[in-house]
Amino acid sequence: MLGTLNMGAFFALVYLAAQKLPTSMASTIMATSPVMMMLFAWAALAERPRVAHVTGAGIGIAGVCLLLLDGTASVDASGVLASVLAMVMSSAGYVLAKRWSAQVDVFSLTSWQLIAGGIAVLPVAVAVEGAPPSLDGPALLGFGYVTVVATALAFAAWFAGLRHLSAATVGLIGLLNPVTGVLLGTAIAGETLTAQQVCGLVLVLSGILLGQPAAKRLVALITTRLSHTMAR
Image 1: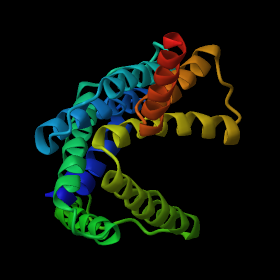
Image 2: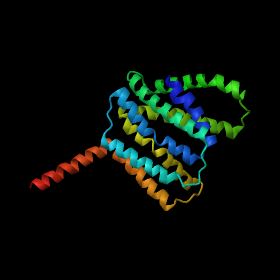
Image 3: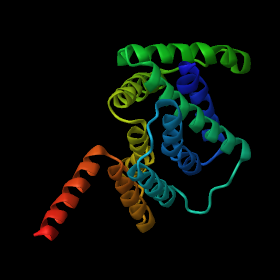
Image 4: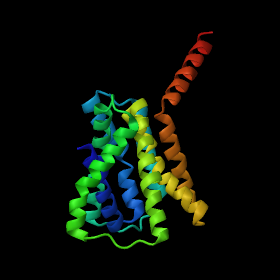
């Protein structure tokens, strides 16, 4: 179940959405996952969302909209549906993985999900697309990077975060995905950040920081000191 939710069906739906929708719109839909993860974590883990988490998610999602949407993106209903399903399925899968995997080491948890997800999607790939195409050297290097770095190591880090932090906190960190894409576009592709995008970056980072435990401790410290100062 976890392999299908988090890997097999998730990747198939994400790549379908990428073909049907502009990246900006697909990323914006996926950016709502922190809210979905909070709801699933509340139901499955009894992790009641804190005000800071909900507020941070709202600010972060607003920032993603400013960062990515410019009003020119076309809408494809099937792409929107695929993106929403990917977001809902993965949010449920992450929360279930957190609930079921307390006694399993992170690398075993990640590897078996990847294996199960590959097995689940393999028959569909063979039936629909047939044998894979021949690959040259650059394509093999690309597949190697996507497989090892962008998938295996990335998911191991993600599930390690879920092991030590609340689902709401980790979900908010996921808002860094579109931020990273925009910054890489600026650094590598020579794209220029607009004033709207800069405001979006500030909002996203503010929303993420607001939902982190360190921010909660900082606010508590400031509140305590202000109370002591006023009492004097």
